[in-house]
Amino acid sequence: AFAVIALLIAGGAGTAAASSVAGDPAFALKQVAEDLQVGLTFDDVAKVQVLAQIADHRLTELQQVADEATRQIARDPRVSPSPAPSGR
Image (cartoon, one colour):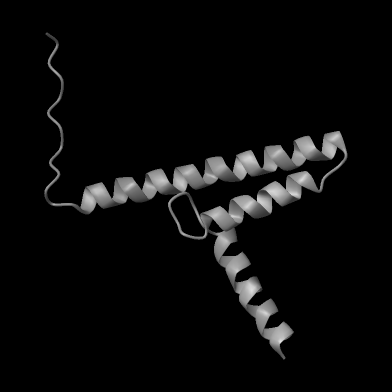
């Protein structure tokens, strides 16, 4: 029974880590899983493919973080639009 509970907890942590982005508490777990995936890939071509996939996911995550920051700034009443730069 303990093994089943441990697997359920680990599975939940893995799911949380998979959807985490930089700054999230589970992001370090995600990085460990990615490092393991790279370390356990022995074919050079496959390793490059794994690294490219990780980089692609990281870029998508970066866009998500930037979009969320933009939404938060837009909702913040303390932030006013910057004046247009003058031509001087």
